[in-house]
Picture 1 (cartoon, rainbow, N blue to C red):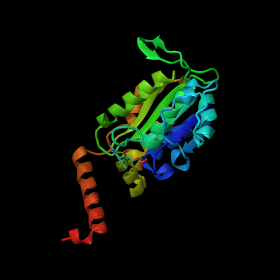
Picture 2: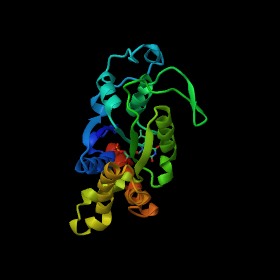
Picture 3: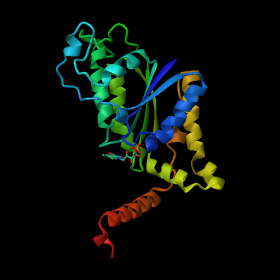
Picture 4: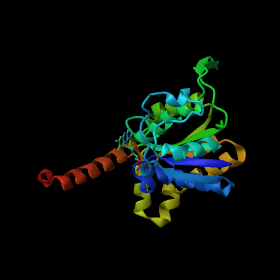
Length: 250
Ligand SMILES: Cc1cc2nc3c(=O)[nH]c(=O)nc-3n(C[C@H](O)[C@H](O)[C@H](O)COP(=O)(O)O)c2cc1C
């Protein structure tokens, strides 16, 4: 099983998205998957120009000569795509959006109706595999992922891939805060179960073809009450504001 993981966080491996994405990929590797991880921040992925030359060309080639040309064969051949992205403006980050738009080149221009929706079929040589979403939000409530999850689900239907689930980590900065706090005696109660659940999710997906709802719930579980999160966040914002503008300090 070939897995292509795309971490689209501007904070790359140091970010909050990676805190869940990396153990998830470890779980997949433990179960025998061949995993490749790429960071969109290391790549030049331009936005789709909308020319549709790819759709009308014989081989589906996009005329833009950027790093998508390296990614296309990897995407075509991977059984599983793992999209890792923080929530940005209620959606995925810009580079991941660019990448998704550019996969229109995988489609063949012969409109058909599937499940009562107009779609295009995949071109020959493009695998129809699975997609998993790993996302992280700054706000406390899990509902902030709703638009993004719906988007990825619809996108999967367009590219004939099965959406197999989402590892969602609301109030993600709290997880990195707890890890940095480095209080080993309490780490198992504070956050370790969340990281272990992410690893289990990867293992389960490879062995059973799906992730159990219980494991997904564990990954998303509340790390602290909302009022405490809001108070800590605002204390931190105040400190940073004062640091960048000492006049604000009373
Ligand atoms: C430009 C920008 C837009 C954001 N928009 C949202 C948002 O709409 N909803 C939300 O809950 N968090 C939002 N966030 C917060 C990030 O999702 C959150 O801090 C996340 O943990 C960052 O992950 P990373 O460290 O992997 O980049 C936004 C952050 C940035 C920089």
